Length: 305
Length: 300
Image 1: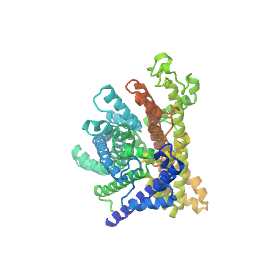
Image 2 (image 1 turned 45 degrees about the vertical axis):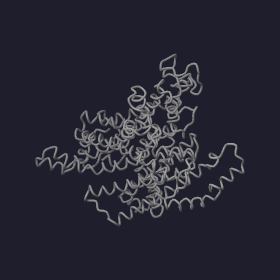
Image 3 (image 1 turned 60 degrees about the vertical axis):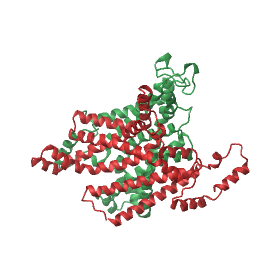
Image 4 (image 1 turned 90 degrees about the horizontal axis):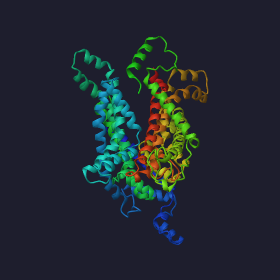
C-alpha cells in the first residue's frame, strides 16, 4: 500500500511537471508579453530594456530553467498584470472555485444518483425513458448557453436572482446550477448503467430467491456494489467541473480560478497562467488518486501493491 | 438509448445457438436505439444540406446589416428569425454559422481520429519506450482541463478556422490513442492475430488486415460522440473570443454578441444555442447507437 502510494505520488509529480513544461512551451510560443505591457508609443530601446529587465531576452531554456527552479520552491513569479505574486493571486481565487465545484457536485450527485438508480430499477418504464432522454439532452446543452438561458429566465425576465458576482448565497445558485446540470446527465447515465449491471448479477438473484425484502436487496446488495463505478465518475467529473468552471465563471463573473486562467492567457500574464495551471493539474491528479484509493475501500477485492 | 431488456433477450438467444449468427444490418423498428440513431444521422445530413445550400435558401447576406432594421423580432418584415443588433438577418447568420460548426466537427474529428488511431496502434504494437512515453503523454494530457489546454493552444495559433481545428485536434487525439491502444493490446493475445503471425504475415499486414478493422468500429463511434463535444468546444472558444472572430458568423460568437441584448432581443440568446444543442444532441444519439452497433463487445 505504502509502495503503491509512493509510486502514484511520484507519477502525479511527474504529470504535473510535464504539464507545466508543456504549458510553458505553449505560452512562450504565443508571443512576448512585453509589447502588451509597455505604452503604445514606447521607443524600441525602451521595449528592449524592459525585455531584458523582465528576463524575456534570455534564451528560452534559460527562462525555463529559471522558472522550474523557482516553481520548485513555490515561487511562480510576479503577475505581469496585477504586480502581485502569482501564487497569492491563485490562492486567493482557489476557495471561490472550490465552493462553486463543490456546490455543483452536490447538485449533480444529490439529483443524479437517485434518478439513475430509479431509472435502472424501473428499467424500460416511462420514468426510465424520461430520465434517459433527460440525461442525453442535459449532456448536449453547452454549459455556457445553459448559463445564458438561466440568466435570461431568472435574472432578466423574472428578476429574482442576480446575474453574477459572488458573496451571497443567491449569487451561488445560478452558476452552481449551470455547472451541476452539466454533470447531472453523465451521473444519471452512469449510475443507471452500473446499477443495471449489478441487477443482472447472480448474487442479486440469490438474495431475492432467499426471500429478502426488495429494499434490502436494493440497498445492501445493489447500491453498495454499484457504488464503485459511480464513485469513479464522480471523481472524474470533478476534473471536468474544474475545466467547465472556466466558461461558467466567465459568464457569471465568478472570481475563481477559471476566470483567472482566461484573463491571464488573454493578457499573456505567464506567471499567473502557469501558477493557475499548476493548481488545476495538481487538483485533477490528486482527485484521480483519491478516486483510485476509494476504489480499494469500496471493493475489498482490489489490493494495491 | 438502446432497449436493454430487449438486448439481453437477444443475447440469450444467440448464446444458445451453436454459432453466433452473422452480423445483420437490417434495422428492426422496435429497436428504439436504431430508430433514434438513424433519425439523428438524417438530421445531421439535413443540417449539412441547409448549410451548403445557404445561399439558395436565404436572400440575405450574413455579414451585411441594415441599421434601420435592428433587433427585429422573429417573423417581422420578412425576417423569419428576426435580426441582430446590426440589422443582420438571424436565419442567414445561423445557416452560414452551421458551415463553421460542421466543418470544425468533421475535420477536427478526422484529424484527431487519424492521429490517435495510428498512435494507439503503434504504441500497442511496438511497446517498449514508445509505449511508455506515449502512455505518459496521454495521462498528462487527460489530467489537464480540456478548456485550459484549448485556450492556451488557441492563444498561440491565433483565432482562425484552421487554428481552431488544429487546437481541437491537439486537445482530443489522446482519447482515440487510449481507446485504440487498449483494444489492440487485448487483441494481440487473441487467436486470430496469433494465427496470422504463425502463418508468417508481416507486422504491417497483421495491423492493417486483422487489427485495424476491429478497432475502427469503436473509434468511429467515439468520433461521432466527439464531434458534438468539439462543436460545443468551438462554440465555447468563439464565445470567449478565442475562436471565430466577428463579423464572421459562428454560433458561439453570435451568442457572445447577442447576450448583450438579452433584455431586448431574447432570440439572439436563445436560437443559436438551440442550433448548437440540437447538433450536439444528434451526434451524441448517433454515437450511442454506433457504439452499440460497432463495438464488438457490445454486439455479443
